[in-house]
Length: 393
Image (tube, rainbow, N blue to C red; front, side):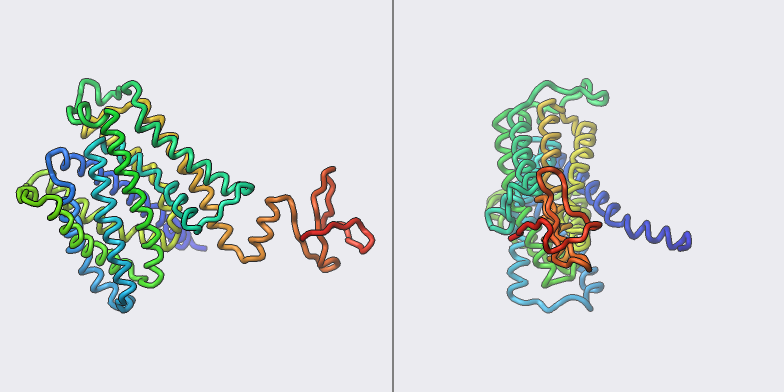
């Protein structure tokens, strides 16, 4: 292999990692800029509408041109799925997320979002899409991880602890954070809204993966979600902000920057990149990098927003991340096992229980069983009819 081919191979393998890191940086920037705009009085309902209107304008031309050969025919079932996708993420999730962020801080909001894999796992169990066998180490990891993330979220919400002074935040205060963002009432309110939003987001990710199977045109799917999200979000905004026409005004300040940035980067590119990554690596790969966004927001929030960092919330965030990776590890093992042929899946499952089935030319029905004294029949021994045997059901 030449040097040029080697570099091309490294770049090809590294593309998903570069894409998901770019995605996390983009989402982190949105959290900080959006928090500034919301603090300046921008309506979260109007913000969601303008954000997806911008994304539609940006993404639609690319979808029309680049997907013209691969875009399947629109059918009623597909259109219903698109309407549900637009309702779940652009309308329900984002409005609840920004309302929760208003009540707390950007760092708190993005940290709470790490409970998403646990919520997805619980949903899958309720819908019987996930089989839980507590004798299996993968199921144990997912159950323990789910309990750990819930415990971390409760710790983050209920325990404040002392302020952690960082060298760049000494002497700086943010009146909104001090008065509105750290007391128990606002923490509970924000945590509930963000958790319900994560539930909606989890439904969106599952439905997006299903929709891509029947509508495998990522750009067109993104454009449709943004367009329908704009329409549905506008209906919600008109109802929630009725009689208050001033909220629809966009000024040449952070509100305009937040609208353009969120629309282009987070609603346009993020949906498209997320769809590509999920198609190639699955949702577990995307989820595994979400703590990176939390770290970026924590640093940027403390510098730009002068958000105060509390020990209880740092510990809670660490506990949430620990639970997150337990759930992700269990799901990754499920994904790896499900990609194997059925006979290999059975062999792997039985190997975990201490039983191995082998087939050799001289003894195709040979069964090797690990016994209590540690001895077992190996490949070097020849099984004969009169040897010690064991029945395996």
